[in-house]
Image (cartoon, rainbow, N blue to C red; front, side, top):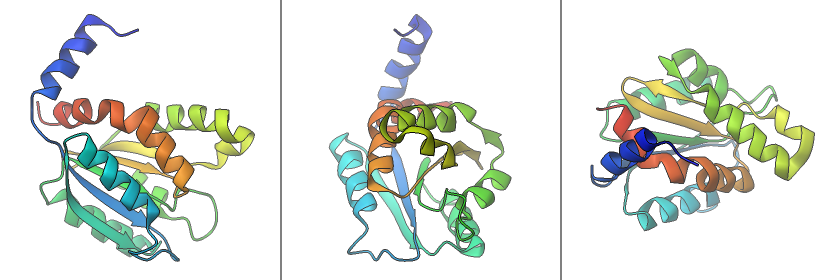
Length: 171
């Protein structure tokens, strides 16, 4: 069930043309060849008629996370999709860097992600520090790095709202 104003926003957002999106995978083990998350996201983004305008594969190092965020925020992407580094292990620093840099937060993104994740993995969903917000006029969405988590976030949250999110930060 959607409200009339929500439907109007989505209609207007859909008329703005392809959304430029950047993908960032944070992993100490993946390579470009084994980055199934970036491949999945690229396929879904392009199938929806949007454009991937940036891609980074970085280590889970706070300096690399911050540098990639700043670099991509200066580019043409309006939505920055991050995956990896959102857990509570000592090496998981993506959330910590992104959370302190966000200028506006989207608490509902993390809350809804954990709710949908709970349906799949049970109570271990609480270990996810998925986060969303706005940084320098860009939508930033960060999910765990498991392929199931990336697919869940795309199918349930990001894909259905990509145009709306991208429009809201520039209207």
